Image 1 (tube, rainbow, N blue to C red):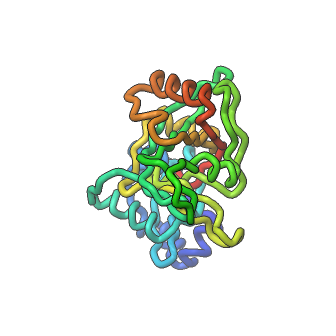
Image 2 (image 1 turned 60 degrees about the horizontal axis):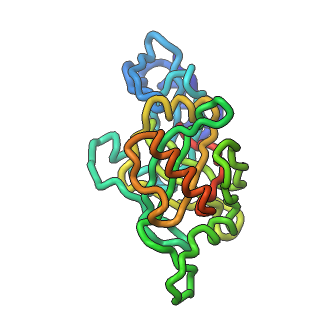
Image 3 (image 1 turned 180 degrees about the vertical axis):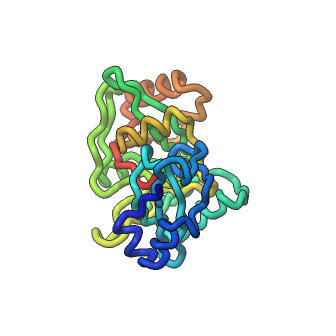
Length: 258
């Protein structure tokens, strides 16, 4: 009852695929890499999901009703993070931007109600002002830099933001691993804009909404605008204040992974 897609088969080879389908290397019971609930290859259809890094590959399993069998390409560092999640290696959960915006980024997950539908959202806020590369002034260029990358100002949370081309939100093993941006050259593999030092857990509701829509809304605000809000209603209030102050940008991003 194991599904092995053509893409997965081409990566692991016909011999390994045959062993999996024959039950020789199948796990029997497993935790679904998408919904994180138990599954059993002997009693329900199961998808093989291959996380593929530059040097390492990790084969995981998921309910076929959650996601199809597929190859998920991630950076080697992100894949090692997934491996550490499985082996229980604990590290401090925080994020660091890359490229032109080096800073520690605070990331909060929550659901935002838009037009009667709950949307999975990620809210990003740096712990300090972000200066443009080469700038020596005290100004905060976080939002202008993001607008140059395709984010759009948000003045009203009742409308969903537009999709940003080339960006995506990376999930693996049912947890948030990072936000990917297009490569600086405009081609090739995406690079990490934010990456969790330890995969960030999300609620079951957030995960279900993300897997249903395959889209995550990413909001960003300058330091001191949002803060760590313990409830989704308080998070929305903080987002609305930031939008009213002209201090909020956002973009919709496809969900990569599971």
